[in-house]
Length: 499
Image (cartoon, rainbow, N blue to C red):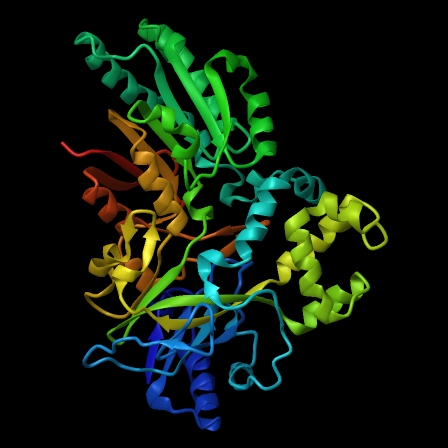
């Protein structure tokens, strides 16, 4: 048996965790249920997101073969490395909540699948294909009605109630760097007439307004008329968000264009800017894009498959609210995800007399959604595509050395990052503020998501993976704490062509 207590820093300090109360009941339950203790892993995390997809205790099967995609009854043969530890299951415990629950009883209940009454919303599959990302997309496409129902803008759900992108000192620093590059190019006659800056994930436009206000003021003092040549492109996948942003930057309308695009494939819409953009600015976007997770356990590499469900008790109450039998509830949830709350209210007025009632159903369903997980062995990293043109081989130096580890792949962020690099001018740079894990060890000591921010999904971003892929493409990728506000978790990533 392996017991992995990851939040070890919480065993000391003013209010240390009682490790005995967390560990002993779980081990006793495994003993009482006659589990093969030699083939069990027990993992303890501190799940910092109060709204998340986990129960206090979860059981994750560890499969020895990969189910075939088209016929789950078949299995793909997977080579077994010499000397692997072949476990049967992982017991996962959230120690932030464990003190308020009977861990022995919960663990015993999770070990019995026969009376599983949970309502499943999907079959097993990679994390990036889960319907939680359909919920995430719905949140951004129907943000206006969600905000109206909650009475607050989405930015107020962020830690501190606002984005770090609005920081004026940070904007001035970026602009100063741009001016220095442009001055050097201007001296040699190599500065293009049109100066492009692109922002992904514009939110309500506050960042764009801060940047453009500061740019215009600094340019007046600088005296080079760069503002007249500036083209600022605001990009987002939500038309509602772009509408808000355009209103916020109306004073700079002649310098601004807006594009609705998929952040994972920016070149689809912005290919005409290839090698022309001097600054790509991104804030709190990568952590909100679909991702798989992989793990290296006991010498073998696994893909973490997920399956979204609604817990039986909560589902029964939600079904009663809308006048359905519980088994009919998944169909209504998927109808919501296809239509959105406004069209759902139009299509089913007897059940949802107005949009607010449909939004209420949406919010309750989202609050209930949980994820079951299992480990499926990968036949080979070279057969696993992380993103277009990025092989799973890029994971090898991160996964295989050292102790067992589980980490995000951040497929959506990786696709966005690699596609964006081709837009950069040779003297351009990509700057991203986000929740980055900057060392693989960070995955061994802390829970990194997924969590829920209001109606959206949030995961930390695998910084070492992005840096490794960036270097292979000829870019230097650096990470540093966000310098203009202390006390937060935001990290600044900068990518530039390597000298």
